[in-house]
Length: 93
Image 1 (cartoon, helix red, strand yellow):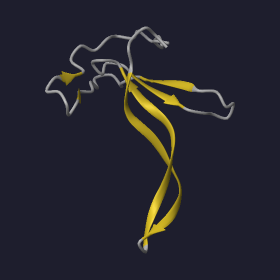
Image 2 (cartoon, rainbow, N blue to C red):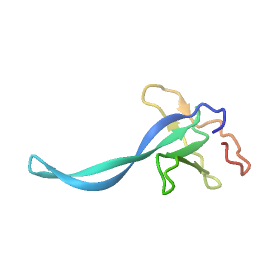
Image 3 (cartoon, rainbow, N blue to C red):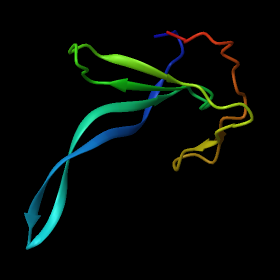
């Protein structure tokens, strides 16, 4: 990956079954990766824990033209995503 200090902002899970708890059917999930963000939310990357080749892979998320994400953290009043960094078609890792 690049030198940008990415941080985890979400967990990616897939439903892999169900179970019963107190007579209620619940879904069972397996973690398959994480969503990473640059400090101001201008770059998002999915990190998959394992793939068909058993290697960790990264997926760069490119916003569609005219779409600007604004991320906020609950522990901060600072809005993230104001200073969008142009990628110019290059994946940052």
